[in-house]
Image (cartoon, rainbow, N blue to C red; front, side, top):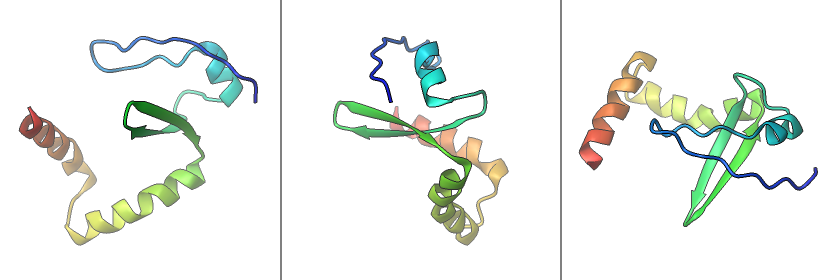
Length: 86
C-alpha cells in the first residue's frame, strides 16, 4: 500500500472526512465499516470487512443478550452514558 499523508478536520458534530485519496486506496465506500483504536495520543483507523466486524461484535451481542439489552435501547444508553461523563 502506498504511503499517503493527508490532514483532515473534525466537524462540530465530531465527524471526520477521510480524504479522497485515502478512501480510494483503502477501497472505502459509503457504508464501509472502520474500527477506531485509541492508544494514548495515537488514533488508528482500520478498515474492517463485514466478516471481521461480525467477529468483533459477537462478544458484545452475547453480553447484550445476557442483559436483555435490545438494539432499540442502545441510543438511549449511549446518551445517558455521555451525560454522566460531563
